Length: 233
Image (tube, rainbow, N blue to C red):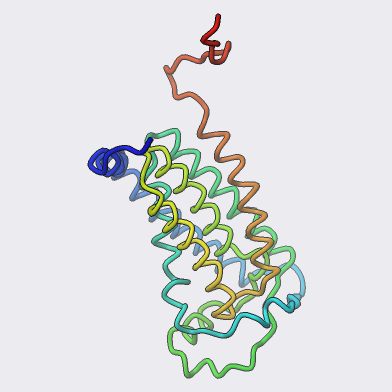
């Protein structure tokens, strides 16, 4: 049964207000630390860079620079997970799993640096993408952490808006935003399909851990080891 509109929106606002200062600092600090580590890894690879192979699926995705805003929107999307965390346990679970996922990805980038095949594109004609190519030397292709964090954020946000019984339209928007970001990584030629698949697998493993950790009882909450009782007993 879906709650009345005022009820689910009120619950989302309550979640967003809870620990808002901690959430804001954790998100901003986490993103800053991630970028520092990301660019440090770019400058310190431990082996030669491998070019990722393109597949026939990559050939079906046309180069579309207009998808860059959607690509960049990840950094708004990823902030929704901590913003809508209901309590400190859920926030800590999100932070710990995000850290682990980033650490695994950056570790792979350092040990096995990869890049995308150089496309026949004059980047000077696309200022936003040209700037991205300037600051990112594209040694961190596989797994795509852009795709990984999009998929992981989709799982986290889905659980949060599902918990407040938000309408299906909101659930659909969440899924479409995730899919749009994932698609944009290929359409802007930042990644190939194999990068995205590897990122999605990483996110899938991280999501399993996150869901399990989020279901742990909070401190002081009683645990029913007997499980639900039958109505016939």
